[in-house]
Amino acid sequence: MELSAHLGRTGLRIGRLALGTVNFGGRVDEPESHRLMDHALARGINLVDTADVYGWRVHKGYTEESIGRWLAGRPARRDEVVLATKVGNEMGPGPNDRGLSARHIIASCEASLRRMRTDWIDLYQMHRVDHAVGWEEVWQAMEQLVGQGKVRYVGSSNFAGWNLAAAQEAARSRHFLGLASEQCVYNLATRYAELEVLPAARAYGIGVLVWSPLHGGLLGGAVRKLAEGRAVKSAQGRALTALKDRRETVVAYERFCDEIGRDPAQVALAWVLSRPGVTALVIGPRTPEHVDGALDALELSLTEPELVRLDALFPPTGRGGAAPEAWNS
Image (cartoon, rainbow, N blue to C red; front, top):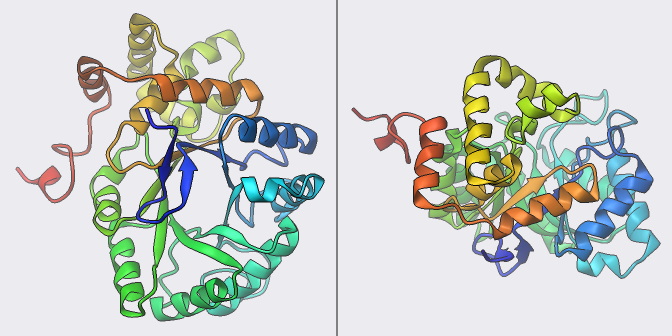
């Protein structure tokens, strides 16, 4: 499997795995997070993905500040890293401290630059769509930031397929590159992206970054870890909720992984990496060992019979594939 790929139709190359930082400032303290970033970079993971709101367990913006201290520790790192952050979440009590208004986009970019101690953001992602703001306003703000050299590429996150289409058509009318990437949830247990998000991204040449490829730990051996008393992420959040409804399926999945002699987490990651249109996976490791385990998934090629078994365990939505054929009888 290729270890790097172009981000959509752009010339920017990123590793097939990206380092997600949502655990930094809470589950992972600063010294360990800096060691994780060093380790990931040394192993060829060049995209560091964060958001202005991350670190909220300490205070909003803490994770960007921590990344800034890491970058300042060895300035040469900045040229090695593809730095991605996000905008759109509530960052303060005021009515303009959230959303995708031109005011908030520009102010948030300036704040992120200060926190991360950098002159530019490689990938500036809208964390979620803002239905109250028109695309003319959004692209006006993004064009200003790109023109000033503060942003290299613009991305989205948690968009629907029609949001991607609307955004790109508006950008095209302005002769602007528009979206370089969409970051969406996608894994064996959550396959909605196959209906419209992935097809829209492919049609417009938008790269796809996948968050929660293990469904919050559900697909990383959750049943076994719970039985052994060593579950962390899989003992909370979306993984625990899903396990209540899908325990039998997850048990069968872990049994299948035992049959083929593979780690459940590596199987789940390899499956997403094999999907058409997927550029990279955003992983949220807490230890260097987690990073190494995820990298091993890059060397795993699932056979056609194994893929068929996985489809049987975790069926696609409707008839499978893209809409509207997926739901046509």
